[in-house]
Amino acid sequence: MQRDDRLAEEAVAWAVRTGDAGFSDWDAFTQWLEQSPDHAAAYDRVTAAVAEAAEGLPPHAPAAANDDHGIRPRMSRRWFGGAIAASLAAVLVFGVWRGDGTYVEETAPGETRVIALDDGSRIQLAGASVIELDRDDPRFARLEVGRALFTIEHDEGNPFRVRAGEDTLVDLGTVFDVSLDDERLAVAVGEGEVMFNPDRQAVRLAAGDALRSRRGADSYQRSRVAASQVGEWTDGRLTFDNASLDEVAAELSRATGATFEASPGSSARLSGSILVDPVRRDPRSVGSLLGVTVRRAGEAWMIDIP
Image 1 (cartoon, rainbow, N blue to C red):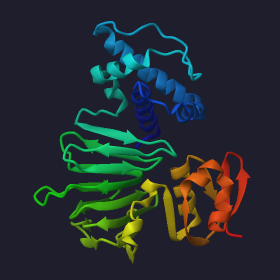
Image 2: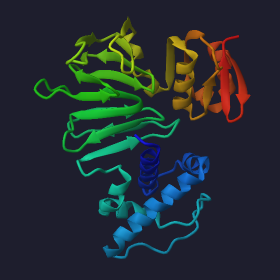
Image 3: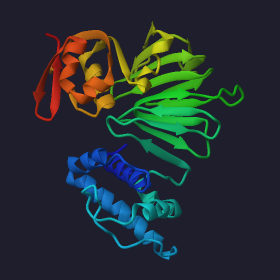
């Protein structure tokens, strides 16, 4: 996905969420706006496009007023949410709703989201994650980046498929966790079975099995994991098993919303299990929790093995 497409989809996702009368995560929204002037500009383009497309609708929108959360004046959020629903044509150009029936769900760092599918299946999306779904094919998902826990209603005649980078996973059971970044894919099965790349390696993974593969490579590594640990991040816990510092930093950033980075050139690996909330409250606490050193480096927290 190109940067401009990703930014447009982020803007539409925030527009939809802030348009909900029950939206309350203003701190995260403000943080996203302040990350770059491009973010505010993209958000303005979305709101303007929806307003223009909704001109033919009954005039239920009051004049813009100052928001009590410090966000600059915009349309009434209640009306705006309805306008988005009624004016999908206005946001098609931004890529979240696509003409072929696909749409994108995206989370900010530190955010999680539960996506309920029509067949009773459920996808729990971790922070800093992007997944593409298809209204015309509800038994398919494409994880573009990040992490997701799939709890699938099994249908032997119509198995659920997940595309993650260059790899394909086919549900043969119920619960499995998938993590994808620029370099690697990781899969762990909590219940039932999953088939990894049925048209290539055809690796069958049962409950307690885990698999890691570098993107674009045919090789992979299998291991065992406690089935109870699969998806435990949804309950606010992260467990690392011989993980590189880059992997640890990425998971901490995704889960907490703070930015962690591994010390450049470090080849250290570590194992351990931590609760996310203490690190979210104080990123320095990861030092004592995981036995690493933590120092401030600009906007990030740099971690290393002492």
